Structures are given as structure tokens and as C-alpha cells.
Length: 235
Image 1 (tube, rainbow, N blue to C red):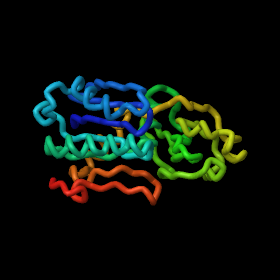
Image 2: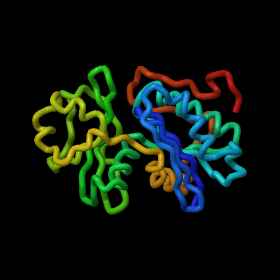
Image 3: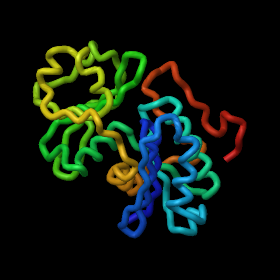
Image 4: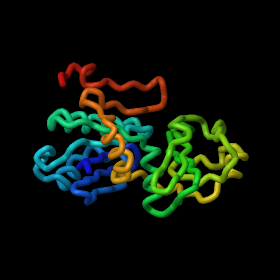
């Protein structure tokens, strides 16, 4: 099994986790707008020497988004720097998909459930994805999208377990969607450790990125991010 470092700052939580020799250690704090001040301190506590390769790290996974614009930039910048400095590959993981794994690990969902994973996108919109739990695995049915809550169109007719901060817009969602919602977990936030099931599988398939390819997924077409090569830096 690969040894991975995971980072997520896409929500109000600043979350880092280490998978090493099959054991997980983590730091997870809900600290809105303080990610840039706290992230490297948390990483130093998790990996004191800072030399990731020497400590057996094979890759760095990160919450690619969607999520907070500022949070995603903080994460991408940190991952780019760490990957470049340590000559490690990166593994991008959907924030909404990782959040669903958080719900599964915490026992909030179970096999056979259809999940509506959401995040509050602010400015009167929400990010969402539709997923299905199959045993210990979670499969994406509808990839990440953004819309106004009144325009949320969820296919199918099965009952949904709703996750995440996008439920702040519950009252504005179409009546047909609200009628399908069973259990609701508006307090759920993704944790970095829950990237590991997805990141390990991607790493095994060779689906990694070089440092200069690390890029947030904003979902919104009008938002862009400059990769290292576009920032005038050389990998």
C-alpha cells in the first residue's frame, strides 16, 4: 500500500492526514478564513522533518474542489510547492466525493444509499454531486456541478441522503427534490483522511499529476487558475 499525505482546505475545515504503513494520523480544525495561517503548522506537526520522501511518502492527494475559491487556491499552492520541493506526484480528489466517504466512515450512510453531496457555493448557489454507495465503495453518478438551489435537477426517483453545507439552501430547492430527501447531514464537512480510498485507487492506476499540473476544479467556467508553468516558475 502506498504512503500518502492528504490535504483539504476547500471548506471551513483545514484538514491534513497521513497514511503510512496502513496507519492514519490527522489534524482537522474548523477555522474559517484561517487556512493559510494554520496549514503549514499542521503539516509540521504531522511530518516534523518536512522531508516527505525521506519519511516514505509516495504522493500527495488534495481536495481539488469544488469549494471555497480562496481555500482551493491555498491548497493547490501548498500542494504544488510540496510536490515540487519533494519531487512527488499529486493525486486530485473531488471534494464532494471525499465528503461522501466521510459520511460513510462516520456511519451516516450505508450500502445501497443514493447520496446528494452538497457544498454552499455562496452567492445564492450550491455545488452538488449525486453518488451511490456500493459496499465500501462510493460511485459518482452525477459529477460535480453548480446551480441555483431552485434549479437543482436530480435524476431518478430514489430517496436521497443529503450531505453538506449546501443544505443551507434547502428551502429554495424544488419541491420534488425536497420530497425525496431522507436523512440530512448539513453539518458534515470533508476530512482529508477520507481522500485515501479514492487516492489509493487512482495512484494504483497511475492517475497522478506532476507539480505543474496541479489545478483546482472550480466548476464555474469563468474562474481560472494559473499552473506553475503559467506563473513563470519552472518545474
